[in-house]
Amino acid sequence: MQYHAVSLADAGHDVDLVGLEGAPPMPAAASHPRITCHRLPDFAFQGRATGGLNRFVAGSLARVVGQARHLFTLLMRLPKADVVLVQNPPAVPTLAVAWLVARWRGSRLVIDWHNLSHTVAAIRLGESHRAVKAIARSERRWARRADGHLAVSKALAAWLSSHDGITAAVVYDRPVAAFSRTMPSAAVPMWTKLAADAGLPVDRLPLVVCPTSWTPDEDFGLLLEALERADRQLARRGGSSDPPAKSDSPAPVLAVILTGRGALRESFEARLARRAFSAIAVRTMWLEPADYPVVIGMADLGLCLHQSSSWLDLPMKVADFRGAGVPVAAFDYAPVLGEVLTNGREGITFRGPGELASILVSVATKATDPTSALNRSQAWLFENPAERWDTQWLVAARPVLVPDGAA
Image (cartoon, rainbow, N blue to C red):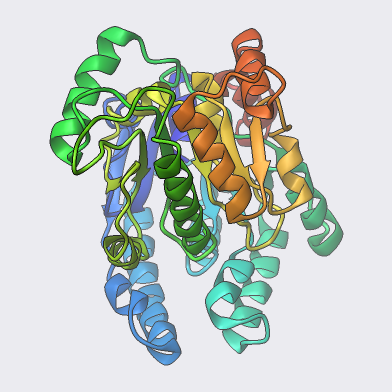
């Protein structure tokens, strides 16, 4: 949504960007003279994240009521908009409130479909739960009343067409200019900062970066098992091709950083603390918006644990690594992944902890087999620069958001 805001502002439109409290906006949005950021309180989140199913439902309902009231009040106070662009998920309460305000004030409503809200809710509640069915009905109702639609994949657009009878323009996530290979002049001080903040060795290690929202559609159990297997393999072979140092505590030969905020981070950190890795340094941390592209551009491998609740959406962070020329190891959750990733090109896929462990060992030991999918991917990325967000937005998104072609 922030990319849309910056693109609209660059095209000469004044933009009010509304989001929940939490992570700060990316620098391009926060500093743009035509963008005004508004933050909504996110009540009851912690209450929903812990406890049983009944507490989750009750906390979610309280959160919906509070958000609906705050969102409606805010939108009615803002200057009248030509178009109200709302991202889904979450469908409740944003779609209903956005539709009501758009109709009341004579604005167009466009829905940006990143996934299906009812399938996300089904992860926790189950497909047969009445709340899941109610969310599905709500999504269908407001989808049919919107004036325009964007979708992140062809598969999602096809589903919307067949189930709801609506047409959505496919707008793939593409990297902005900030994502590129990090030059040594920036990488050296950033590694020094990571070493100080996260307790990594002072000497640079092969680096795997895993951006995560810490949500239930990411398999952290798979990651932990893969890390354990890779750690044992690396420990047996002495880590890398270099002779192991004579020390009671061997130094790690691979760094894995999980960056992001979300409800499942604390439980993962608790599980991680019960494990003792010797060859791999695993860290969880939050990267500030200005630091995030630098670390992405330093990585030897991007790691994507995303498992779509609908099998129709795409992992957004793949685009960031694509822009930086960094291969991605992504969980192969559904055929839709093939819309943005082909083995040996944008990256490689895995289906289980054994395959992921082998990939991590290859990165740590800097395997040089030119026929491996990982090395073929590195070569392909070097020869094929990524399409950028501005190009995709102008062709696919702008005709929906600004149908008259006004500047």
